[in-house]
Figure 1 (cartoon, helix red, strand yellow):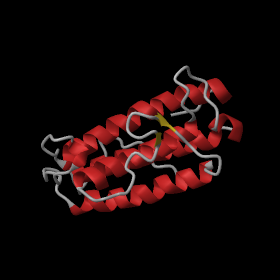
Figure 2 (cartoon, rainbow, N blue to C red):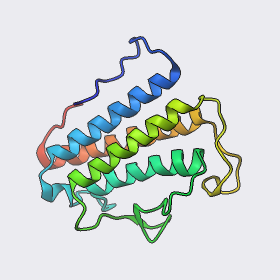
Figure 3 (tube, helix red, strand yellow):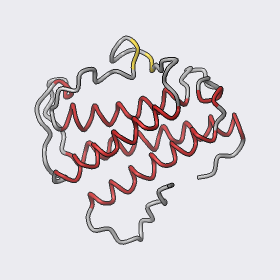
Length: 172
């Protein structure tokens, strides 16, 4: 089900709830846009940078993993750069066995973990020390969430253009 746009005048129980609503909305729009594309368009690029819609889905799943589990909570997550061929500086990648269904499922599983982390901590709580911070002081949960929202907003906007080029207007 599509998450509604988080109307700024709608009451929210907390600032945390506002962040959660926006993350749900952006994930919902990402899902709808990817599923609107034929399979061949999901796996191909219409942009000079070369990224594909499926690569974008995988990237955003790993963005949440990196910032919330590996970064904020300081957990060992195995390969935090698993969406990049060649590690952190590499290009986004999707294997031939990965489909829209499997990648979107992975995103939704990650979203549930993210929601649990976000709900279990105060926004002003500082993250754990670890590799994610590259030697800098960890950020607060609120700063991490603000970063995640801008990442989603930017990339869903990119996907709007790709979908419009591929199949016409994609809606909100």
